[in-house]
Length: 172
Image (cartoon, rainbow, N blue to C red; front, top):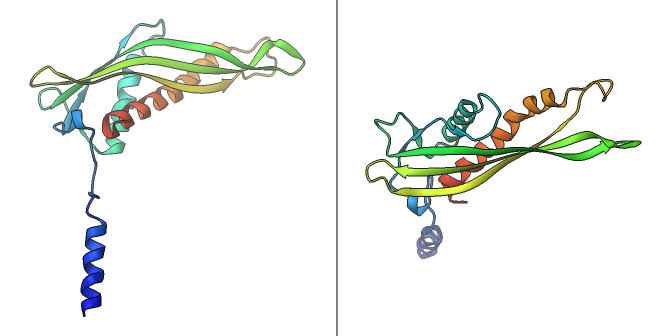
């Protein structure tokens, strides 16, 4: 009986530092509901602002740490700006190093989370989203790399939204 009691005491003490459920970073402890605004777009890519906001909302809902709501009910508001979209060649065509076969697409943005009641900035950081894409088509001379870039853009946005959600819900 003593052995069982000692075992139970050790078992309960061994888990003393663990908690069940989400553990928010210190600045975000008071936030339960968050509103996501459309991002500002400092690039020449049209209609990307709402795509970013939609993907961020989807990622926050999947994470489950915060409830996404409208600004009237929110504890905090998430704002952001898309600063740049860069396309960089990664791989050239075999036999012709001047033609690019694969590109890397990088989105750079900046976000801030503001406490609604006080206007205090809880979190503010730069972030990136990266993906790669291949130039498609039978003949690379006639291929449309801009079309391929537009098709790859949602993947880079999804990665950026995943990084943002991880940062605000886990702190890193």
